[in-house]
Amino acid sequence: MIYDVFISYSRRDMLIADEICKSIQSVGLSCFTDRNNIPPGSDYVEYLRTAIRRCKIFLYIASDNSYNSQWSHYELKEFLDEQSIQELFVYVVDNCELPEDLLNEIDEKSIRIRRSCGTEKRDGSITDIELAIQLLKASEEIIMGNIDDEYGNFAETRTVFISHSHSDNAIADEIYNYLSMNGLNCWIDLHDIPPGIPYAQAIMEGLKSSDSLVVLYSKNVIESHDMLDEIQEAHTTQKRIIPFLLDDTPMIGQFRYYLARRQWIKAYPGYDEHLKELLCALKGEVQNSIGVENATPNRKSRGSLNGTKKKKKSRSLNEIIKGILNLWK
Image (cartoon, rainbow, N blue to C red; front, side, top):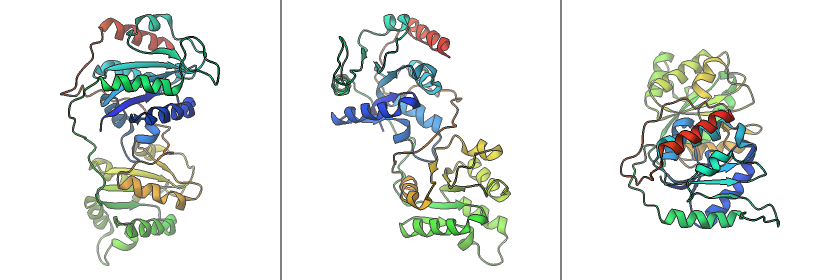
């Protein structure tokens, strides 16, 4: 899917980003923000970078918080490296000052304005809706080629393998029943291992037949070698893995290695209130309020998209901005 606007922001500016996103959507543009548009179980970094490549406009929300935001810096670098996005908009939301070199070198076509604060409107400042109208005008001038969606359509019914600790049998059984009653074909050892079949063989066959692995992560999983084996096999065979967090137990060791950069569902307190969110995730429907805190941007870019109209940006501009970003770290 091609989004009109990619919004880059510091996590501390999340509420501001939500307000801006609503204004942009009110004029008919589609927005991408990580917490609203990355499905649970997706590789966070790869999904993020693909979204950057597929957006017409990159909106950088500049603030005192963004100066210290690893993700804001990473996303802006990806934008500059990619060179397939037509417009860069810098929107200053507080009293922070952008470096003079950055202000001087940004393309004159880019917006370099401040956000109005309440009823106060200084010279050069605009409201969120005025920004949205500016973005709409810019978007209408941009034509992007046809792009295949590498993430596919997950709306069809899929087989789901439920990985859990036996100490969480009751919860796992309830989740199994809920997903099954809502049209998903589920596999769980409590019901799907025939008598006389070796346990390891049955697990491997269940994983092989499944498209997605739901990991019920709780304090009980730390000593579960069976769960770790299931996660490792799902990772090796490139299954979709969705961590469903039953409590606030930190991810450690190999569990952290395999799960931390996956988009997860925070299902506590009250896991039953998040079953619909899990169902939607398995069907490919993105829900709000999905948390990612531990992903690390460390993969190499796979290059630009074919058939996309590109905006020319000078190497000197990229080098200058990258140098400034390095100084901010």
